[in-house]
Image (tube, rainbow, N blue to C red; front, side, top):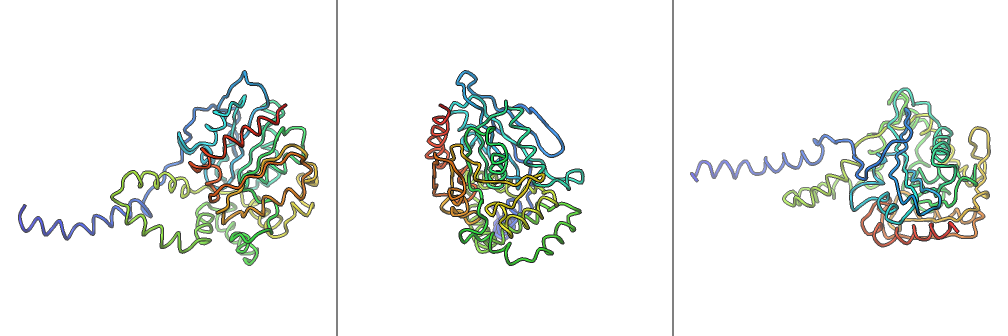
Length: 350
């Protein structure tokens, strides 16, 4: 190697590293997250798909329906071959496993309200035979609780994961931000999005809940791990999911901010769907409540508050040492906790 070429390589090395860093972070084009377990689409419209993953048809019992949050891509419930709530449910022997896949909002669906999402869940339950084990995650959790309260006979068991029920309980960072931010700010964001709440605005909001971790610590970690390809591959997959922006219907988003986060109408008993009041006291089916002890978005108190409102006699309360999405897609959670949760659910079928 000549002195000139060696000097060039030394001078070029920082630039090459910066370029690699940029390509792994802010310059990366995010592909749409993929589903990993084979499925077929039973129903599709402008707002959602209902995916059927099959199951143990000879095992009997109601099918299991997973309801992801409408924020971010629904494939988080089937994140990878060894990180899949869907796969874990199939391994538990349910007669059938299905999941809702929420689509990104467009002009055609910008006026969808919470009521429309609840009707989507009710229609999915009918498609699956009229009675299911219902598993709701985060936003999909309080939506599942509402659907179950409106028609308890359609839900064999109700499992809520990292789902706010009492939106004012605990000391969650999201609760504090929504309480102090004037409603016109959220209305302006929806107007800026042309009637939808843009996914990039939502992602920025979540980043701002943990500014040190997201804006300083994470970039430093990535910089220091640029030569660790296995780590980068794992980081890339999760970041691609998190930063693949999915828009929400503006009407729905503003109602959630106003009626749930600010006015806490679900536990107050004043929340309505198509003119019907939602009474959490009608939840008498077996309940499984799964919270993350490190969840900064939905502290466990917001979920466990349901025990004070539901009439269920059989309640399984589980705390997983994980953050928000880690409660239902983390490797340790799926290995150490979810098989037992699913066994408990199947045990309630008798």
